[in-house]
Length: 212
Image 1 (cartoon, rainbow, N blue to C red):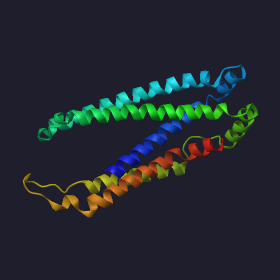
Image 2: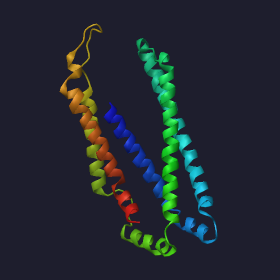
Image 3: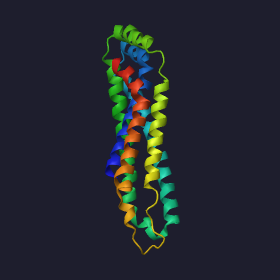
Image 4: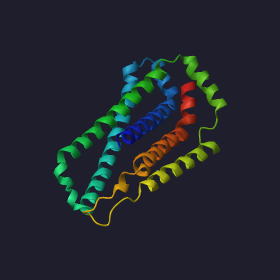
């Protein structure tokens, strides 16, 4: 469970970071123009930082709202869990979501903007455009879709392998719930599937940005 959580967290961080970098990359000429007319680095970074912090707040709000709905549904479906007793733990989870959203968006937007501020004018004007001319297609290629579909199949297979292992009698424990299939194989397939999905989504975009 911890490994799955860390993997999903890393995937979220990489996806958010890549999205912010691509968004700021599209405004590289505006950033450099502001710098040429005398704007300080802090003045240029500030609006980008505020914008993505607000987007981070919206994202955390949607995540907390969705999680609240899931907790409410599970609590009604399985009242014996009595999740309302875990108010402190649930509040801490919500707080961590907010803190992580602000940290990820703030740090990513700061360093992405700083990157283009440190470029020389000629690098912004022709070096990046030269790279773009070599990589006109930013959208997925066929191999990206194939890898993505394969990763979805792996994730689905992992969740299917987790299915079952319960007992008809709630007082009877079924050892099958801790079998190799559900404890080792299924989580491994899910984690590998998510990692493969991440690779298929950001591979070409990351390659393009890293070259710039």
